[in-house]
Image (cartoon, rainbow, N blue to C red; front, side, top):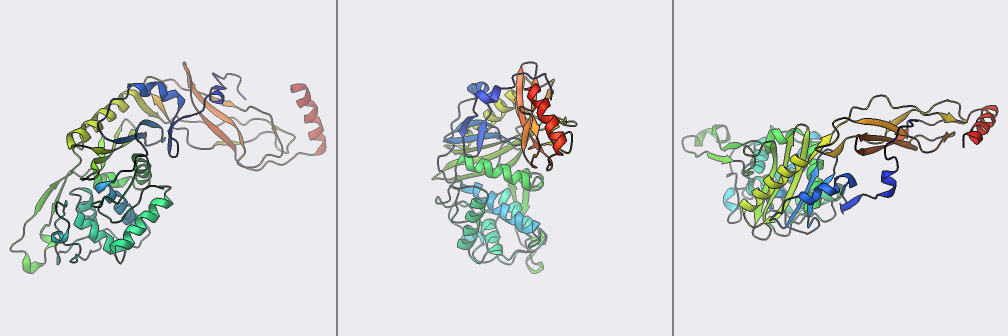
Amino acid sequence: MSKRIILPFLFAFFTPFFLCAQYFNTPPLLVPYMESAPETGSRAAVMIDAATGALLYSKNHDEEISPASLTKLMTIHLIMKEIEAGRASYDEYIPITEESWAQRQPPRSSLMNLEPGQIVTLREIMLGLAIPSGNDAAVAAALRFAPSMEEFARLMTIEARSMGLYVTRFVESSGVSEYNMTTAEEFAYFCRKYITMYPNALTDFHSVSEFHFPVAENIPAVFRRNWRTFYYSNRNNLIGTFPGVDGLKTGYIDESGYNIALTAERDQTRYILVTLGAETTRIRDADGRRLLSWAFDNFKTIRPHIGQIESPRLWKGRANSVELRLEHPADFTSPAERADMLIFETWIPEPLIAPVAEGTIAGYLIIYDEYGELNRVPLAVIRNYEKGNIFKRIWHSILLLFKR
Protein backbone atom coordinates (compact mmCIF):
# COMPACT_ATOMS: atom_id res chain seq x y z
CA MET A 1 0.00 0.00 0.00
CA SER A 2 1.46 3.33 -1.05
CA LYS A 3 2.10 6.00 1.54
CA ARG A 4 1.98 8.85 -0.99
CA ILE A 5 -1.63 9.83 -1.32
CA ILE A 6 -2.83 13.24 -2.47
CA LEU A 7 -6.27 14.10 -1.09
CA PRO A 8 -7.16 10.47 -0.29
CA PHE A 9 -10.48 11.30 1.29
CA LEU A 10 -11.74 13.80 -1.29
CA PHE A 11 -14.69 11.74 -2.51
CA ALA A 12 -15.61 10.71 1.04
CA PHE A 13 -16.74 14.26 1.69
CA PHE A 14 -18.24 15.13 -1.70
CA THR A 15 -21.13 13.32 -3.32
CA PRO A 16 -21.44 13.44 -7.12
CA PHE A 17 -23.14 16.50 -8.56
CA PHE A 18 -26.21 14.93 -10.11
CA LEU A 19 -28.00 16.71 -12.95
CA CYS A 20 -29.38 13.70 -14.83
CA ALA A 21 -29.32 11.36 -11.88
CA GLN A 22 -30.87 8.36 -13.60
CA TYR A 23 -28.39 8.11 -16.46
CA PHE A 24 -25.46 10.52 -16.08
CA ASN A 25 -23.68 12.58 -13.45
CA THR A 26 -21.10 15.31 -13.42
CA PRO A 27 -18.00 14.47 -11.34
CA PRO A 28 -17.33 17.19 -8.75
CA LEU A 29 -14.04 17.96 -10.48
CA LEU A 30 -15.91 19.28 -13.53
CA VAL A 31 -18.66 21.27 -11.81
CA PRO A 32 -16.81 24.62 -11.67
CA TYR A 33 -16.14 24.49 -15.41
CA MET A 34 -19.81 24.10 -16.29
CA GLU A 35 -20.53 27.70 -15.31
CA SER A 36 -18.92 28.79 -18.59
CA ALA A 37 -21.35 26.79 -20.75
CA PRO A 38 -23.01 28.86 -23.51
CA GLU A 39 -26.69 29.71 -23.63
CA THR A 40 -28.80 27.56 -25.94
CA GLY A 41 -32.02 28.24 -27.81
CA SER A 42 -33.33 24.68 -27.92
CA ARG A 43 -35.98 23.63 -25.40
CA ALA A 44 -33.89 20.75 -24.08
CA ALA A 45 -30.30 19.59 -24.41
CA VAL A 46 -27.91 17.03 -22.92
CA MET A 47 -24.23 16.60 -23.74
CA ILE A 48 -22.00 13.81 -22.45
CA ASP A 49 -18.53 12.40 -22.88
CA ALA A 50 -19.21 9.27 -24.95
CA ALA A 51 -16.39 7.27 -23.35
CA THR A 52 -17.08 8.00 -19.69
CA GLY A 53 -20.72 9.09 -19.60
CA ALA A 54 -19.76 12.25 -17.72
CA LEU A 55 -22.49 14.87 -18.05
CA LEU A 56 -21.17 18.19 -19.33
CA TYR A 57 -24.35 20.11 -20.14
CA SER A 58 -28.02 19.74 -19.25
CA LYS A 59 -31.11 21.82 -19.97
CA ASN A 60 -34.61 20.48 -19.32
CA HIS A 61 -33.11 17.01 -19.56
CA ASP A 62 -36.30 15.18 -18.60
CA GLU A 63 -38.85 17.21 -20.62
CA GLU A 64 -40.88 14.87 -22.83
CA ILE A 65 -40.61 15.90 -26.48
CA SER A 66 -41.38 14.05 -29.70
CA PRO A 67 -38.12 12.85 -31.28
CA ALA A 68 -39.42 13.35 -34.85
CA SER A 69 -37.01 11.66 -37.29
CA LEU A 70 -34.56 10.83 -34.51
CA THR A 71 -36.99 7.91 -34.24
CA LYS A 72 -35.25 6.43 -37.29
CA LEU A 73 -32.14 5.77 -35.18
CA MET A 74 -34.14 3.23 -33.18
CA THR A 75 -35.40 1.77 -36.45
CA ILE A 76 -31.82 1.39 -37.70
CA HIS A 77 -30.80 -0.05 -34.33
CA LEU A 78 -33.38 -2.83 -34.63
CA ILE A 79 -32.24 -3.56 -38.18
CA MET A 80 -28.61 -3.78 -37.03
CA LYS A 81 -29.58 -6.18 -34.27
CA GLU A 82 -31.27 -8.45 -36.79
CA ILE A 83 -28.24 -8.33 -39.09
CA GLU A 84 -25.84 -9.16 -36.25
CA ALA A 85 -28.09 -12.04 -35.20
CA GLY A 86 -27.91 -13.46 -38.72
CA ARG A 87 -31.63 -12.98 -39.39
CA ALA A 88 -31.10 -10.30 -42.03
CA SER A 89 -28.45 -9.21 -44.52
CA TYR A 90 -27.36 -5.86 -45.90
CA ASP A 91 -27.60 -7.33 -49.40
CA GLU A 92 -31.07 -8.83 -49.18
CA TYR A 93 -33.82 -7.28 -51.30
CA ILE A 94 -36.67 -5.48 -49.55
CA PRO A 95 -40.17 -5.61 -51.09
CA ILE A 96 -41.57 -2.17 -51.87
CA THR A 97 -45.30 -2.38 -51.24
CA GLU A 98 -48.16 0.06 -51.59
CA GLU A 99 -47.67 0.97 -47.90
CA SER A 100 -44.03 1.95 -48.40
CA TRP A 101 -44.60 3.74 -51.70
CA ALA A 102 -43.45 7.35 -51.47
CA GLN A 103 -46.78 8.61 -52.80
CA ARG A 104 -48.60 6.97 -49.89
CA GLN A 105 -46.67 8.83 -47.19
CA PRO A 106 -48.16 11.76 -45.21
CA PRO A 107 -47.97 15.27 -46.70
CA ARG A 108 -44.60 17.08 -46.27
CA SER A 109 -42.82 13.77 -45.63
CA SER A 110 -39.12 13.47 -46.20
CA LEU A 111 -38.71 10.69 -48.76
CA MET A 112 -36.30 8.23 -50.32
CA ASN A 113 -38.76 8.03 -53.25
CA LEU A 114 -39.49 4.34 -53.16
CA GLU A 115 -41.88 2.85 -55.72
CA PRO A 116 -43.37 -0.62 -56.08
CA GLY A 117 -41.29 -2.73 -58.44
CA GLN A 118 -37.95 -1.18 -57.49
CA ILE A 119 -35.08 -3.53 -56.60
CA VAL A 120 -33.79 -2.21 -53.28
CA THR A 121 -31.32 -3.72 -50.82
CA LEU A 122 -31.56 -3.42 -47.05
CA ARG A 123 -28.34 -1.38 -47.08
CA GLU A 124 -29.99 1.12 -49.42
CA ILE A 125 -33.02 1.29 -47.15
CA MET A 126 -30.70 2.10 -44.24
CA LEU A 127 -28.97 4.81 -46.25
CA GLY A 128 -32.42 6.12 -47.12
CA LEU A 129 -33.20 6.31 -43.41
CA ALA A 130 -29.90 7.94 -42.46
CA ILE A 131 -29.41 10.55 -45.21
CA PRO A 132 -32.69 11.77 -46.81
CA SER A 133 -34.54 10.53 -43.69
CA GLY A 134 -37.11 8.79 -45.83
CA ASN A 135 -40.43 8.04 -44.17
CA ASP A 136 -41.06 5.58 -46.98
CA ALA A 137 -37.82 3.79 -46.08
CA ALA A 138 -38.98 3.60 -42.45
CA VAL A 139 -42.22 1.90 -43.53
CA ALA A 140 -40.36 -0.56 -45.78
CA ALA A 141 -37.99 -1.42 -42.93
CA ALA A 142 -40.80 -1.91 -40.43
CA LEU A 143 -42.72 -4.24 -42.74
CA ARG A 144 -39.59 -6.30 -43.38
CA PHE A 145 -39.24 -7.13 -39.69
CA ALA A 146 -42.84 -7.15 -38.46
CA PRO A 147 -46.25 -7.99 -39.92
CA SER A 148 -47.56 -4.46 -39.31
CA MET A 149 -46.40 -1.01 -38.35
CA GLU A 150 -48.15 -1.36 -34.98
CA GLU A 151 -46.20 -4.52 -34.21
CA PHE A 152 -42.88 -2.99 -35.24
CA ALA A 153 -43.57 0.06 -33.07
CA ARG A 154 -44.32 -2.27 -30.18
CA LEU A 155 -40.93 -3.93 -30.73
CA MET A 156 -39.29 -0.49 -30.74
CA THR A 157 -40.83 0.38 -27.39
CA ILE A 158 -39.92 -3.01 -25.92
CA GLU A 159 -36.34 -2.45 -27.07
CA ALA A 160 -36.33 0.99 -25.42
CA ARG A 161 -37.41 -0.60 -22.13
CA SER A 162 -34.75 -3.30 -22.40
CA MET A 163 -32.14 -0.56 -22.81
CA GLY A 164 -33.33 1.16 -19.64
CA LEU A 165 -35.34 3.92 -21.32
CA TYR A 166 -38.56 4.42 -19.38
CA VAL A 167 -40.07 7.49 -21.07
CA THR A 168 -39.10 6.78 -24.68
CA ARG A 169 -41.92 5.15 -26.63
CA PHE A 170 -43.00 4.74 -30.24
CA VAL A 171 -46.17 4.35 -32.28
CA GLU A 172 -44.50 4.19 -35.72
CA SER A 173 -41.03 3.89 -37.21
CA SER A 174 -40.44 7.17 -39.06
CA GLY A 175 -41.03 9.86 -36.45
CA VAL A 176 -43.92 11.55 -38.23
CA SER A 177 -46.21 11.05 -35.22
CA GLU A 178 -46.21 13.45 -32.28
CA TYR A 179 -47.07 10.46 -30.08
CA ASN A 180 -43.54 9.09 -30.34
CA MET A 181 -41.85 10.43 -27.22
CA THR A 182 -38.42 10.77 -25.59
CA THR A 183 -36.29 13.11 -23.48
CA ALA A 184 -32.90 14.64 -24.23
CA GLU A 185 -31.42 12.60 -21.38
CA GLU A 186 -32.81 9.28 -22.53
CA PHE A 187 -31.95 9.84 -26.16
CA ALA A 188 -28.36 10.77 -25.32
CA TYR A 189 -28.16 7.54 -23.31
CA PHE A 190 -29.54 5.61 -26.29
CA CYS A 191 -27.04 7.24 -28.67
CA ARG A 192 -24.16 6.29 -26.41
CA LYS A 193 -25.28 2.65 -26.42
CA TYR A 194 -25.90 2.74 -30.16
CA ILE A 195 -22.40 4.04 -30.96
CA THR A 196 -20.85 1.51 -28.60
CA MET A 197 -22.75 -1.36 -30.22
CA TYR A 198 -22.26 -0.25 -33.85
CA PRO A 199 -19.17 1.97 -34.15
CA ASN A 200 -19.02 1.36 -37.91
CA ALA A 201 -22.51 2.82 -38.35
CA LEU A 202 -21.07 6.33 -38.18
CA THR A 203 -18.84 5.69 -41.19
CA ASP A 204 -21.23 3.44 -43.10
CA PHE A 205 -24.38 5.54 -42.72
CA HIS A 206 -24.45 8.65 -40.55
CA SER A 207 -21.46 10.57 -41.90
CA VAL A 208 -22.15 9.76 -45.57
CA SER A 209 -22.55 13.13 -47.25
CA GLU A 210 -24.56 12.13 -50.34
CA PHE A 211 -26.90 9.40 -51.50
CA HIS A 212 -28.24 8.86 -55.02
CA PHE A 213 -31.44 6.89 -55.57
CA PRO A 214 -32.73 5.22 -57.64
CA VAL A 215 -29.86 4.21 -59.91
CA ALA A 216 -30.05 1.81 -62.84
CA GLU A 217 -29.65 -1.27 -60.64
CA ASN A 218 -32.82 -0.32 -58.75
CA ILE A 219 -35.00 -0.22 -61.86
CA PRO A 220 -36.33 -3.35 -63.61
CA ALA A 221 -34.77 -3.67 -67.06
CA VAL A 222 -38.06 -3.03 -68.89
CA PHE A 223 -38.40 0.42 -67.26
CA ARG A 224 -34.79 1.65 -67.57
CA ARG A 225 -35.51 3.91 -70.52
CA ASN A 226 -37.20 6.47 -68.33
CA TRP A 227 -36.43 7.09 -64.69
CA ARG A 228 -35.20 9.90 -62.50
CA THR A 229 -32.34 9.73 -60.00
CA PHE A 230 -32.67 11.89 -56.88
CA TYR A 231 -29.58 13.39 -55.27
CA TYR A 232 -29.75 13.66 -51.49
CA SER A 233 -27.40 15.51 -49.13
CA ASN A 234 -27.03 14.61 -45.49
CA ARG A 235 -29.48 16.73 -43.47
CA ASN A 236 -26.95 17.14 -40.66
CA ASN A 237 -25.51 20.53 -41.61
CA LEU A 238 -22.54 20.15 -39.26
CA ILE A 239 -21.11 17.20 -41.20
CA GLY A 240 -18.29 18.61 -43.29
CA THR A 241 -18.59 22.06 -41.71
CA PHE A 242 -17.68 21.41 -38.05
CA PRO A 243 -14.43 19.46 -37.53
CA GLY A 244 -15.02 16.04 -36.01
CA VAL A 245 -18.78 15.70 -36.53
CA ASP A 246 -19.63 12.27 -37.97
CA GLY A 247 -23.28 11.72 -37.01
CA LEU A 248 -25.97 11.10 -36.10
CA LYS A 249 -29.44 12.34 -37.14
CA THR A 250 -31.77 15.32 -37.49
CA GLY A 251 -35.53 15.49 -37.10
CA TYR A 252 -38.45 17.87 -37.39
CA ILE A 253 -42.20 17.88 -36.95
CA ASP A 254 -44.37 20.86 -36.06
CA GLU A 255 -45.13 19.50 -32.58
CA SER A 256 -41.48 19.13 -31.54
CA GLY A 257 -39.54 21.69 -33.54
CA TYR A 258 -36.04 20.98 -34.84
CA ASN A 259 -34.11 18.16 -33.14
CA ILE A 260 -30.64 16.77 -33.60
CA ALA A 261 -28.52 13.97 -32.20
CA LEU A 262 -24.89 14.94 -32.76
CA THR A 263 -21.58 13.24 -32.15
CA ALA A 264 -18.09 14.54 -32.80
CA GLU A 265 -14.59 13.22 -32.12
CA ARG A 266 -11.24 14.99 -31.90
CA ASP A 267 -7.97 13.66 -30.45
CA GLN A 268 -9.63 10.53 -28.99
CA THR A 269 -12.31 12.57 -27.25
CA ARG A 270 -15.90 12.00 -28.43
CA TYR A 271 -18.96 13.91 -27.31
CA ILE A 272 -22.64 13.13 -27.79
CA LEU A 273 -25.09 16.02 -27.88
CA VAL A 274 -28.88 15.82 -28.15
CA THR A 275 -30.89 19.01 -28.56
CA LEU A 276 -34.67 19.00 -28.87
CA GLY A 277 -37.22 21.66 -29.70
CA ALA A 278 -35.32 24.40 -31.54
CA GLU A 279 -37.53 26.86 -33.40
CA THR A 280 -35.34 26.92 -36.53
CA THR A 281 -32.51 24.97 -38.12
CA ARG A 282 -30.30 28.01 -37.56
CA ILE A 283 -30.88 27.84 -33.80
CA ARG A 284 -30.44 24.05 -33.80
CA ASP A 285 -27.13 24.21 -35.67
CA ALA A 286 -25.85 27.17 -33.66
CA ASP A 287 -26.55 25.30 -30.42
CA GLY A 288 -24.60 22.33 -31.75
CA ARG A 289 -21.61 24.41 -32.78
CA ARG A 290 -21.49 26.43 -29.56
CA LEU A 291 -21.82 23.46 -27.21
CA LEU A 292 -19.36 21.23 -29.05
CA SER A 293 -16.82 24.05 -29.35
CA TRP A 294 -17.16 24.77 -25.64
CA ALA A 295 -16.75 21.09 -24.75
CA PHE A 296 -13.62 20.60 -26.87
CA ASP A 297 -12.13 23.80 -25.43
CA ASN A 298 -12.76 22.89 -21.80
CA PHE A 299 -12.64 19.10 -21.43
CA LYS A 300 -10.91 15.99 -22.72
CA THR A 301 -11.15 12.25 -22.28
CA ILE A 302 -8.18 10.73 -20.46
CA ARG A 303 -7.41 7.06 -21.11
CA PRO A 304 -4.58 6.32 -18.69
CA HIS A 305 -2.29 3.39 -19.31
CA ILE A 306 -2.41 1.36 -16.10
CA GLY A 307 0.52 -0.95 -15.55
CA GLN A 308 0.61 -3.82 -13.09
CA ILE A 309 -1.52 -3.15 -10.04
CA GLU A 310 0.22 -3.46 -6.70
CA SER A 311 -0.70 -6.64 -4.79
CA PRO A 312 -1.42 -5.77 -1.15
CA ARG A 313 -0.62 -8.08 1.75
CA LEU A 314 -3.16 -10.72 2.80
CA TRP A 315 -3.40 -11.44 6.52
CA LYS A 316 -4.34 -14.82 7.98
CA GLY A 317 -4.60 -16.41 4.54
CA ARG A 318 -2.99 -19.28 2.69
CA ALA A 319 -1.59 -16.77 0.20
CA ASN A 320 0.56 -13.86 1.29
CA SER A 321 -0.84 -11.26 -1.09
CA VAL A 322 -3.99 -10.49 -3.06
CA GLU A 323 -4.21 -9.87 -6.79
CA LEU A 324 -6.50 -7.00 -7.76
CA ARG A 325 -8.16 -5.77 -10.94
CA LEU A 326 -9.88 -2.55 -11.95
CA GLU A 327 -13.62 -2.78 -11.30
CA HIS A 328 -14.24 -0.68 -14.44
CA PRO A 329 -12.08 1.15 -17.01
CA ALA A 330 -9.98 3.98 -15.67
CA ASP A 331 -11.01 6.40 -18.45
CA PHE A 332 -12.28 9.71 -17.13
CA THR A 333 -13.21 13.20 -18.27
CA SER A 334 -10.74 15.87 -17.23
CA PRO A 335 -10.55 19.63 -17.49
CA ALA A 336 -8.52 20.31 -20.63
CA GLU A 337 -5.86 22.14 -18.65
CA ARG A 338 -5.21 19.21 -16.31
CA ALA A 339 -3.85 15.67 -16.41
CA ASP A 340 -0.72 16.19 -18.49
CA MET A 341 1.40 14.44 -15.86
CA LEU A 342 -0.56 11.65 -14.15
CA ILE A 343 0.43 9.93 -10.93
CA PHE A 344 -1.08 6.60 -9.85
CA GLU A 345 -1.42 5.38 -6.27
CA THR A 346 -3.23 2.45 -4.69
CA TRP A 347 -5.15 3.03 -1.48
CA ILE A 348 -6.20 0.05 0.63
CA PRO A 349 -8.03 1.57 3.61
CA GLU A 350 -8.19 -1.57 5.77
CA PRO A 351 -5.98 -4.68 6.18
CA LEU A 352 -7.17 -7.53 3.98
CA ILE A 353 -7.94 -10.48 6.25
CA ALA A 354 -8.79 -13.93 4.89
CA PRO A 355 -11.18 -15.20 3.83
CA VAL A 356 -11.69 -12.68 1.02
CA ALA A 357 -14.30 -13.35 -1.66
CA GLU A 358 -13.81 -12.78 -5.37
CA GLY A 359 -15.14 -9.37 -6.38
CA THR A 360 -14.63 -7.77 -2.97
CA ILE A 361 -13.73 -4.08 -3.33
CA ALA A 362 -10.43 -3.88 -1.49
CA GLY A 363 -9.50 -0.28 -2.20
CA TYR A 364 -8.98 2.25 -4.97
CA LEU A 365 -6.57 3.23 -7.66
CA ILE A 366 -6.25 7.00 -7.26
CA ILE A 367 -5.19 9.09 -10.25
CA TYR A 368 -3.97 12.63 -9.61
CA ASP A 369 -1.75 15.37 -10.92
CA GLU A 370 0.12 18.18 -9.20
CA TYR A 371 -3.14 19.95 -8.36
CA GLY A 372 -4.93 17.03 -6.74
CA GLU A 373 -7.13 14.04 -7.38
CA LEU A 374 -8.64 13.51 -10.82
CA ASN A 375 -10.23 10.07 -10.63
CA ARG A 376 -10.46 6.96 -8.50
CA VAL A 377 -11.33 3.46 -9.63
CA PRO A 378 -12.42 0.62 -7.30
CA LEU A 379 -10.02 -2.31 -7.07
CA ALA A 380 -11.66 -5.74 -6.91
CA VAL A 381 -10.21 -9.04 -5.72
CA ILE A 382 -9.75 -11.36 -8.71
CA ARG A 383 -10.47 -14.71 -6.93
CA ASN A 384 -11.42 -16.28 -3.61
CA TYR A 385 -8.71 -16.31 -0.94
CA GLU A 386 -9.04 -18.87 1.87
CA LYS A 387 -7.88 -18.84 5.48
CA GLY A 388 -4.43 -20.04 6.37
CA ASN A 389 -3.64 -22.62 9.04
CA ILE A 390 -4.21 -21.95 12.75
CA PHE A 391 -0.59 -21.06 13.49
CA LYS A 392 -0.47 -18.45 10.73
CA ARG A 393 -3.74 -16.95 11.86
CA ILE A 394 -2.54 -16.64 15.48
CA TRP A 395 0.76 -15.12 14.42
CA HIS A 396 -0.92 -12.60 12.12
CA SER A 397 -3.41 -11.69 14.85
CA ILE A 398 -0.49 -10.73 17.08
CA LEU A 399 1.15 -8.72 14.30
CA LEU A 400 -2.09 -6.92 13.50
CA LEU A 401 -2.57 -6.04 17.17
CA PHE A 402 0.76 -4.25 17.23
CA LYS A 403 0.19 -2.75 13.74
CA ARG A 404 -3.05 -1.16 14.88
